[in-house]
Length: 368
Image (tube, rainbow, N blue to C red; front, side, top):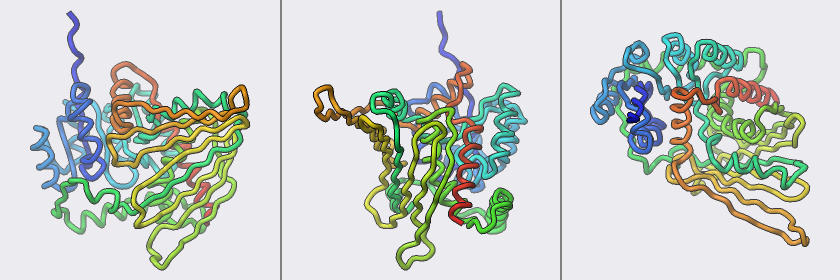
């Protein structure tokens, strides 16, 4: 008689927006048999207590206690900023790690930790959910039909974060002291400064908030579409329109995929735009592929794929492809669990995140 495998015992460090809006619904829904949350942690003791009570899990404000827990098999790290410091502590404690992006602002740190995890038989996965969209793999399988490939064009229309999340029921507490918050901000600024120390003129806020906060998803999509290939940036331009000078600029970037097509990114901050939109177009001599990616917090949606090719009689053929099922956030955690239990390879690994970090640093230098 086959018994159901025991769930992976999970500790969560950081209980803010991304944890509450996408990860907990997945862990309590489609993944409830694969994972069991046993310990949760946040700088806000009140938030940790509230979430812990809902989950029936231990709670506190000390990440080290979660990492040291003998009943914790793996940790999910969702704190603000980069995550390599906590992730490395967890790896050294023998825990598998799922860390939200950005993993590290420094590509060498990401590569170092990827090697450590591999050497010690541990899973280290980075939260690039777009790589787990079924439409990405389907597009990759159809590239020969439209080739030779000439151009990959990515477009992002990004409303304010508040506009995207205003309808989400997020628990928030105000019980963290200003000294603790200031210390966390200072630590983050030190990491950013170290990563761009050899890049004169780079804007640290743009580097941290825009490139590592959003554009990293597009560099990860490039990796998912062209696994094993390296991408470089050739030209970049930024434009800060309007009178609200504290808003992010628009970015236009052009690059090249080794032994592949050129790529172009148009990233546009549109404060009051109705909804986040993102699409990827792949152009070849015989047709095109278009991937329409869902807004980040629309948990019920998956990406769609539209193929346009010239038929045998010269007619234009258009096919729309879509997959039903769990969203990309649930799929990436499901893959994390499979890597732990079966040894399956990690798609969004830290080595890839390191290559993204290098490309983002190159883009930042061009923008400077």
